[in-house]
Each structure stands twice: as structure tokens, then as C-alpha cells.
Length: 302
Image 1 (cartoon, helix red, strand yellow):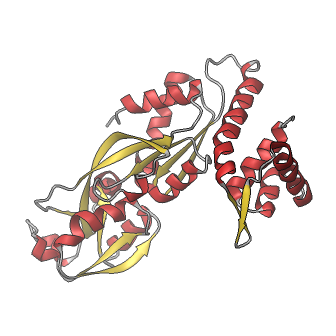
Image 2 (cartoon, one colour):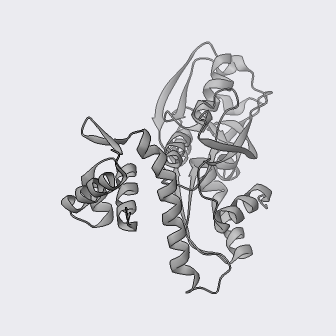
Image 3 (tube, rainbow, N blue to C red):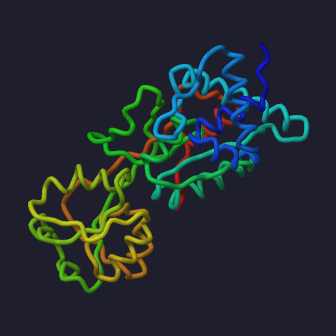
């Protein structure tokens, strides 16, 4: 039996994209070539690797067992191809995923400092909601995730295939337009927040999960004005007076400082934990280990 790297590349692409058409586009191969590579790999291994479900190819038990090994082999191959062409101590490509607040407010500075310390500059950054980042880590599409998650409600973190470590923490805040009726009040109570419209992130967002677990249960009457996919959209809608917003203090700080938004003072503990996440079966290359260690000790500088 002789399994080729090309077969493993095709296998990983199909596992991630879930269709022959999408995988062929990703690899710049014809659909027949992708289908043949999968068929040859399954014949050589003596096992089917996928189940067809609603015109999608979903990994079966054998495929799920093979995926982390294939990912490791391809990662090691990438290291071999680069190590002789580089004078740097670290080689390889690192795929980082981050939730919206972390990806926009923290990771650019984390990467700046990591590059300065390690002299490694081959990283990719994907910003999405926490659930999406988790899904992509489980599919070996990302190496490391930096996400939000409410302690009592972090259901998307409760997966036995994930390695999860506490990272930094942040505090949430409630903001409104500067001419909103609540902006003129020096102190705000929970009663003042009743019967207001709220601007929320989409399902799967850590910010939304935190609102639903920490603040919403304390309110009897509230409604969603808009459900938006980016923090910037929420800031703009709040500044336009379209509702109250529940945001990270980090994300809201510039809009508050520039008087686009008013931050309400509320006697509540709205702190939340950030998490560093990766797949338990992920191959720990020197680059992977270096970044994990660096991120674990890193602190943002003002």
C-alpha cells in the first residue's frame, strides 16, 4: 500500500469542503481527478471514508480517525519543504481563528508582538463568531482559536475533541446613542433597561451568549431591534439611536471616547472569559508550540 501526499491533500480538502465540486475548486483539480483520488485512497486503505448525506460528503468513523493523521503529515511535509530554504528557526504556516471582538481588538497586536519575538511571519487570520471558529478547528481547517464563551453557557466548548485553556478576560458594557433618553441619567438600574430594543450579534456569537446568560434573565421585557453579524454594524446602529447595544468594553472604547456612543453605568459584574482552543489530536509542531506558549503569557499593552 502506497498512500500519496496528493491523495491526503484531496482527502483533507473534501473533508473540509464536503463536496467534490468545492474541493476541486480549492485544489485547482478537475472533479474526476478528485473523485479518483478519493476512490484510490479508500481502495488502498480498504475502508470507505465518507458517507453521502444530502449531496454532501461527511466523514464516517474511519475518515474521522484518518483526518488528524493526514493533517499532521501535510503539516510536517510543509515544514520539510521550507526548512532548507529558510534561515529562520521557525517554519510552517499557522492558521489562527478568532471571534469578532478578539480578532479585531486583540489579535493584530498579539501577532505584531509574536512576529517581533519569533521572526516568523507566515500566519493566516480568520475572524468569525465563536461557534464557526470551533467548527473549523474540529474540521482541522484552523490550528488555534481565540474565542469568547460564557462560563455557564459555553455549550460550543463542550466537546471532548477540544483542548481548552482560559486566556485573557474582558468586561462587557451597555452603550446607547448620546442623545438617548438613558444617556442623561447618572446611574442606571435594571428597571431602567426594561422595554427597550436591543442590538444583538447573530446566534453563535460569544457576545450574544453572554447577553442571554448574564443580562437577559434579569429583564422581564426586552426585544431584539436588529440582529447583526459585526460589532461595527452594532456600533453604527446604536449611534443612530436604533437600540441599546451590549458590547465588549474593548470594542466600544473608541466610539465612547469619540462621543459617538454613551456608556451606561450599571452596578453589575459583566466580566467574561476568553479561551484559547485547539484540537486534542492536532500535531504540535515547533511553530504551534511556540505560538501557544507566547499567547498564554501575552498581555495587551495600552
